[in-house]
Image 1: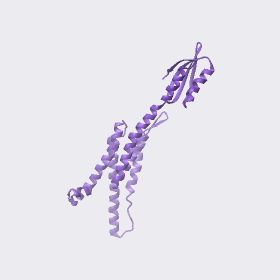
Image 2: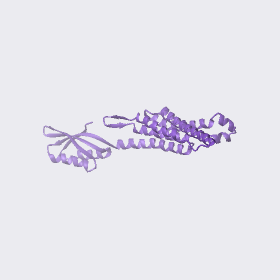
Image 3: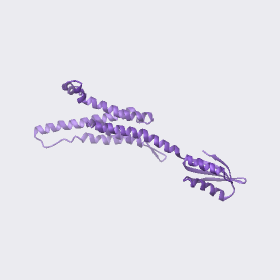
Image 4: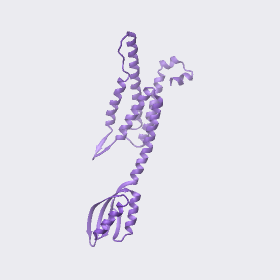
Length: 241
């Protein structure tokens, strides 16, 4: 940022007095964090645009302070002839711990299912991007932002596609009262690599109504149903859910 302003003809003294270099880095952090936050906002996640933007800017500012305070302390120590050297990572190290608590607040557990892990991981990565900006590692910060953004967009769509292609369904099948017919029905599903379980069996006059839970790609389930309807002993097949 400083180099750009110098090329535009702005005096170096103005840049230093007005802290334009720091403001430029904070602006870059806001853009990078906002880009990831925008994707989260459009996806309807709790940590959206403003949250990720503020986290990235805050991490960049704390990293900047950590480096500056250590540099100032070291300059004083060198002038005084002291051997002690300040660690520029002291404040920065606390960012990771603080973000850990913030990310933990986005994780929920209900009925054995954990949700919010992706949001927590995104918050953690956004803080790391802000730290990279504060450390003046602009290319690394921009590259990480692009990688995270593409991962959230493309992998999210891939996950949705896989869920649609592989899901569980329940079917009610009316069969002749013969054990071999039921075994054949199960075999038709299993031959296609589908997982099938008998949930319930009820006798209806001279027929059996079997409730089957089937899990696997929908296209394979549809193929199995077409084969069953063409087989003797199978009277009716219907979705139960």
